[in-house]
Length: 86
Image 1: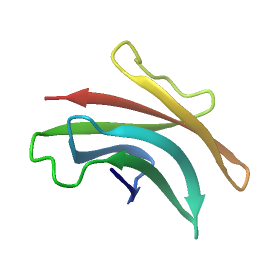
Image 2: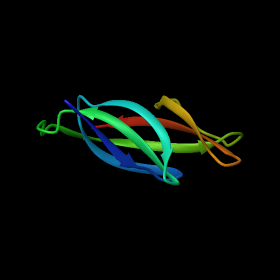
Image 3: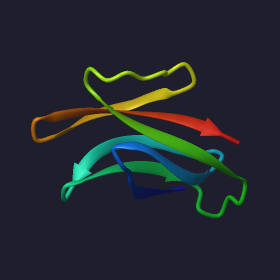
């Protein structure tokens, strides 16, 4: 297992990850929102994780999404959710 960092966008970002991946954290780094994921880089059984960043007070349908964390960017407060799709 290793930990990898992926930049994400405000809104939705799709990332191909091994099926057994575990999302660890979300934070700003050098002005860019990033997510850290623990995974087995040799696992060829992939899935698509859809990361969705929404602002406080914005609408979200989270019926199929897991909460990852909250992060700040200046005056903005964002919340990261993830849905895993095979």
